[in-house]
Image (cartoon, rainbow, N blue to C red; front, side, top):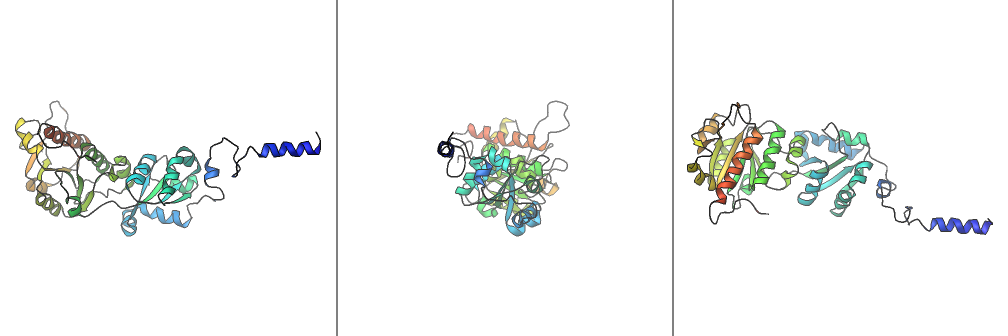
Length: 312
């Protein structure tokens, strides 16, 4: 081959590459998406600042929280306000559409090392995709300001997984809002957010440390307060309970170990028991929540003119 032929062959080979150096027909990998960028480490200022959001005090000071995983980040981009997205190269390859969506919405996308991503995670197997979002809670008056006819109240629930699951069930059942009363755990806790599978972005959340304030707000909004109680005077499945369930209600759910507390039992309009027909000692909170909330959905379905659930 002559020198001229050799040059022509090299030009021909080069013509199969695009302007950014990728072969023609190839898809952009992490290298293409983050060309010229050095991945951030756990010492990078943005990463270090985000790591403070793993604690409630840091979240409250900054007014922001962390969202981890593809599903939660997808919901955050669709329904929340995302400021930053930390992503590893492998996660960017798995979810390029989320990287592009974050950029389209004006979020700062920062490639990070696997170790940096692990430092922002509270899971055993980090997913390499973490967003920084605005806190979601609103004032009680805002949460109850619309035509609120179906609300869930978490009273003194300390387990974040349970709180997230209740939010998820409330979202599925069509609740208008979830209110977090007393010593209930922060719904922006990482475990709570993961357990909600993105439902924290779908309906209003409001918090108040004074449970009586929450119950008074519910009554002011015209809601009948119902507390789930294994020794309640109303049987959930009694036909006579259906008219109450079909009306505007606030279901109060407490911790598995102690319930919502004696003051809540005393203050609620009705105590409703879920009958146990076998020999089980009790139901866990998530199961009880699903049964109670869907009992309201079922009761409303039989009332002409009343929508069975929220419609977005």
